[in-house]
Amino acid sequence: MNKLWKKYQITKALNNWQNTELSLFCFKNCEGNCCRKPYNRVLMTKKQIQTILKIPDNDALIADSKEKSLGRKLYWVMTHRSSEHPHCPGYNIQNKHCHLQKNKPKICRSFPITVMDDNVRLHSECLLAQKTSAPAIKKLVNICKKYNYKLHVGQ
Image 1 (cartoon, helix red, strand yellow):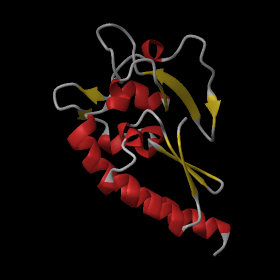
Image 2 (cartoon, rainbow, N blue to C red):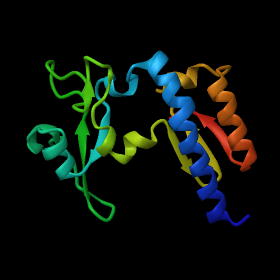
Image 3 (cartoon, rainbow, N blue to C red):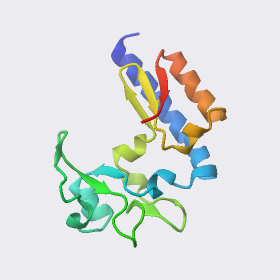
């Protein structure tokens, strides 16, 4: 199996895992821990900052942030902007979920999984990373084994 095809296949399997196993775990156990954690940063476009979050871009941008050039300009948005907003601006406290589902930034859609080379990393801030015997983790391990990727838990 060529490397590009293999990465496509594992990415597809991981997306399916995230949409089923991870989503189920999050709804039952997490309630947006990654979104509620203070002082995280999320990469967003200026349009997402202004239209989706409906907040002034100068309120969301970190004062010393630099524009990232990845084919488009991206800005770091602080998830904790003030004592009135101690969570990601996209997080809905009432229903304990992100209200940006349709336009969620890529970094949020892929969290807590990162795929690099032949490695899959499960971010340590994800509550699931602390539950190594959970069925969802076992399925993640099996996906990694199937495509000969190494699974790492941590930053």
